[in-house]
Length: 137
Image 1: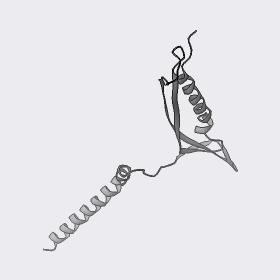
Image 2 (image 1 turned 180 degrees about the vertical axis):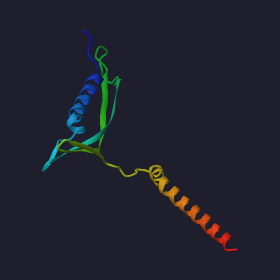
Image 3 (image 1 turned 90 degrees about the horizontal axis):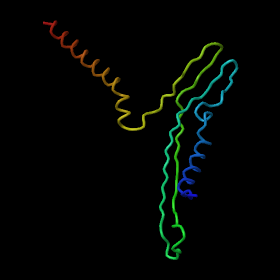
Image 4 (image 1 turned 180 degrees about the horizontal axis):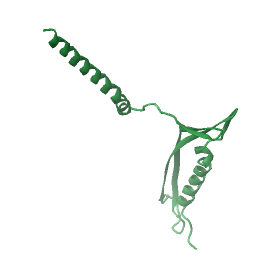
């Protein structure tokens, strides 16, 4: 019978713990009743997982014994609100949660429509001013 390698146990244990945390109730929250309105929070779960290990020979190891094993694993999770389902009677609405921009590129992209509007307004005013100057003569 072949012996199972310790890295397999390490990964299995970590994945079981991740499954315990990341169930459907984590993504779709518990309904909140407010009178005749029901609010259901919806979130996005991002998971990262890493595991590694190494077999090595120790100084005092007997020739017939297994190599020593050293390893570790870890996981990281990020839970972010995405939207709320609002239920009132037969009506259901999805209300998204807009996250603030997290870096400079996001801020610039978010500002582009406003900048374009300002530039367009400026150009139009300049053209109107120039047209008004030409009709004065």
